[in-house]
Length: 546
Image (cartoon, rainbow, N blue to C red):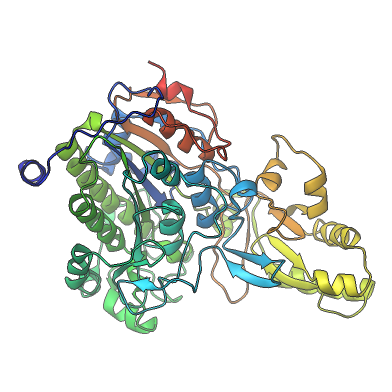
C-alpha cells in the first residue's frame, strides 16, 4: 500500500484543469478515470462457483462493494469478441457500428475483409505484421472518441488486451494508444494508426522479456488438485487438451510453444497472459499519467480466459478454474493500485464480460440428458450446394460461409438472371430443415420486417445492409457448429456479468435485463457527457439514483 502512495505522491502533480461541459453529472465527485475490466469467456456462474475460493480483494471486493447488474446480455446474433467489443465500446448494435463479424464480404469491392486488418498501417513495437490494424471499419464513435471530442483531445484514452481485436475496438478511432501481445515476438505492440513512436517505457517493458520468462516455467495448479472440487477430473475424456494430446497438469509451456511452431499464442491460454496485461496496465497508468488531472481519462483492460484453447478444456475444467483463481489475484492488485493511488471515489470501474463460453454439447447431453448436439456446417453447405446446382444449374452460387452468415455470388446470380430474393428464400427454407438450426432468415426478410424483442430480434440487431450475408443462421439452444478439421469456437450464451464500483456508487443489485449497449450511456451520465447520437442503449437508472 505504502509503495503505491509514494509512487503517486512523488511523481504526480494535479493541475487544476476544470471540467465544464455544461452537463450535470450524476456523481457528486467526478471520477478522474474510468477503468473497464473486461474478460473474454466470462460466464456469470463462475462467480458463484468459485466464490469461496476467491480472495477478498478481487472479484469479492467488486461484488460486495459495487452495484450488480445480474441479468446483463449482448443482444447480438453472433456472439464474437469482435461484435460484442464494438457494441460495448460504442453503445450501439452491429446494425449501426458495422462490426457484424470477424470478417465479411465488401460487396462494392467484391472482396473479403477482416474487421480490423489494415495494411495501410504498420506495426509499432516489433518487426511483425501483427500491428497492421485499425478501427477504420468501425462505423460509430466509441465512448473514448466522444470523450476526446468533448475535451478537445485533452482526455487520455487507452486500451490493453492480449488480442488485437478487443484492443482496437475498445480504443476506437481517436485513442492515444491500443496495445496487445504480438504472437510472433511475445512483445506488447501497437499500430501506427494510434502511435507514431513507441514509448520508451513500453520498450523497457518488452526488454524484460516477460513472455519468455513465463514460458520457461511449467504451469501447475495454484493449489493441490483436491482443492478444485468445482471442476471435473483433470484427466476427463471430455478434454481435448493442447494439440489433442496434453490435457492434464503440469504443462511444460516451452515444450508446447515449440510443438506449436514457436508461436507465443500459447501464453494466451495460460494465467500468465493475464499477468502480462495487468503488469503492462500498471506501467501505462503510471508512465502516461492517467487520472492525474481533473479531466477524466479512459482505460480499458481486457483479460482472456484460456483464449483459443478454452474449448479444448471446457468451462468445468481445472484449467479454467485455476485461470480464474489467478485472475482474481491480478484484479486484486489492479484495484489496490488504483484505490491507493487515486481513492475509490475518484475512479469509476466496471467489470464485465466480452462473451460467455458455452458448455460443451456432448457434456450437456451425456451427463445431464439435455437437448444438445454438434452441427456440421461443412456437410450442410455441401448438401445445400448440391441442391442449388440441381435447382439453378451447376455453378459456385455460394461465395462464403462466415460463422452464421452465408454470402451468395451476386455477380453470378445477376449474370444467370436468377431472382436474388427467391434464391435467398430457397437457401433459408433448405437450411431450416436441418436439426440443430433454429432459424435461417433471408436478408431481404430481415430488411422488410421488424422483430422487436423475442427470438428473432438478434437478427435485426446484427444485420447491416452493406455487410451482412444473404442468409443468417441461429442455431438451436445447446447445439454447436464444429467443422471436421477446425476446433470448436462458438457460443450462444449472451449473458455476461456487469458490476459497477467506485465514484460514489452505492451497493445494490438489479435483476432487470440490461444490455451491452447500456454501458456507454451510463458512463456518459456519470461524466456529465452527452453521448454520441449513435448510441442506442439506455442509462441504467437504478445505478445512478441518489
